[in-house]
Image 1: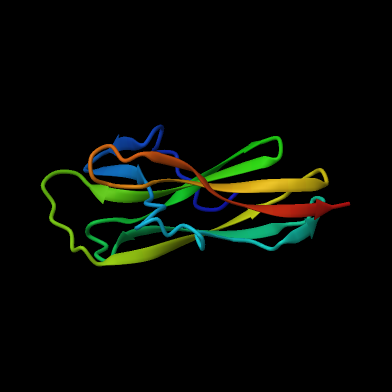
Image 2 (image 1 turned 60 degrees about the vertical axis):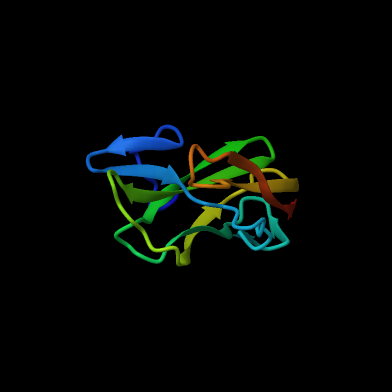
Amino acid sequence: MNKRMIGCFAALVTACSSEAYITGLAAVGGATASRITAPDSSKVNAPVVVTVSATGSISEGCNRPAGFKVQEAGSVSRIEIFHRYPRGDVTCPAAPKEYYETVTLRFPTPGVKTIRLIGVSSWRGEGSPLDSVQRTITITP
C-alpha cells in the first residue's frame, strides 16, 4: 500500500465539504519531460522509488497536495496525483509551484514496464486528461 492515498475522489473533480479534490496539473506550456523520476532498471519484486510532480499554486489557500492513487494493469503503472482546491469564488495567485509525491512500486515479472503520470493540461474549464506523460523501466530477474 502506498502512503498518502486518499479516499475522497472518484473522477476528475469530487466534492468533499468545502473543498474539491482535483487531478494535478501535469503540463505547463508543454513541459512534461521531468514529471516522473525513476531508475532506468531494477530487479523483480525490488522496491522501485518513483517521484512524480504536478503543478499547483504557490498559495496553500488555493491548493494543497492531497495524495495519489496507483492503478496497475499488466506492464503499466498509472499514477494520478491529486490536489485540494477550495470551492467558491477564490482568487489564486498566478505563481506556480511544483508539488511532489513519492510512490514505491514493485514489479513481479521481468520486462520493460511503463510508468504513466495521469494529470490535466489545464485547470481552465474541464481540462483535458493526460495519459501520455510516461517513462519506461527495465525489470530484470
